[in-house]
Length: 557
Image 1 (cartoon, rainbow, N blue to C red):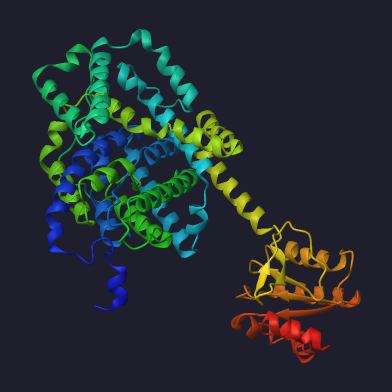
Image 2 (image 1 turned 30 degrees about the vertical axis):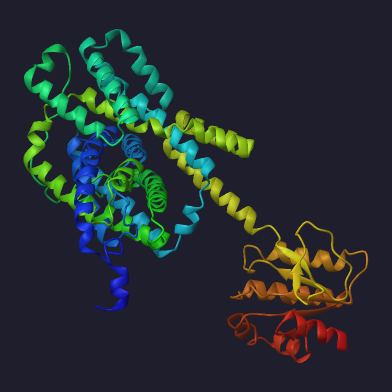
């Protein structure tokens, strides 16, 4: 096998030491005790049968284990992705519980995977990765509160309102049904919440979801809970899911916006989990690899009824605490999930819905990050209020608009930075080194005037940067006779940039100012040497390989 193939395949496993196997097996079993119940609970958040969460612990985990770059990250699904899945299905008019629902889930997960792979092809990972903490914290607050509100019917034992969307409407509809709540269901919910919060606070290593689910199933087997008004989950089929094909007809166009939003959030959560769980000796996390791994995991999982996959902080933290050394722990999780699907699934039908609701509520409480909002406000009040604004958009209008706002704000910030001038004056220090003046500092009268572009020029930013050069040369109190423009960072030269440089040269020449360009990298230099303008420019001695040579050429004239 070649070195390239070796580096590409299973970087989360190889190189592997036999001494790690015991730790990986223990970590896989420990993580499975948390992940499998949590994934089934998140399936109900997505308005899907619980087995869809179980299936998400099989194919996507296996694919990520062999392609993903993180040795520790656990990639199944998350509360954010599950909530966005529910929102997308409702917005697309998919009827909950209908025969079309499962086929449309296959379509949605496949679309998410294709969006992720397209982002990899066009190398958009770094752009999505730049979504700010402000918007992420705001989205997570909205997700946490929305998910909690959606669990209220399960906790109260009242009928859900499947077509009601938005936090405020969902919460109001559920609270309006409080007089009709089932006392037995409320009691089960309260006990589960107390146990889960207590275990989380005092014994965080104990898998709380597994504990309450096992106890609840045992009680349900001994006591006829439905007779007391406690609803159980629908029957869970045993066995591995048969492959299914996506529905490519009426709902596919309406699923596209939600699929895009899910792809963005799944990638952000996965890469954040991968980075925070990375050990110092592990390889750096590459956004493009994560896009590939997550995209393939979604595409492969789609045909086996998987929810859109994403990295999860809760399960990854268990994996890390349990001493996992590689993605072998993920493969152990896969084996455990298959065994549950084959042999334990029928028993799960004894599980009260209220228990899964309580599991979800406790799991998403960490998303309502009040401490994070406080930190943002202390560092920058504008970001603190911005996060609250994003959260309010998510709560009032839904999570898909909130993600759209996050992406739009990121693009606006990037465009603002790109279109801002990054031209500074450089002066020679007494040691002979060239030093940059701050961008907002006043120009120092100098002959020649030496300016440096701190960023490569291309179509999106060339005009404001060349405008800054023009202003420095033509609007100075003492007009320089020569301007030296240092383009040391100009690795590639586009035709748009070239035309504007020609116009700058003509304008400065008309004002009696001589333009000299220095330090073009080899690739850009080869490009510009093909033009007649540059051949004349270079013949006049107006290109020099570095700043020292440029200034010496001026002094000789």
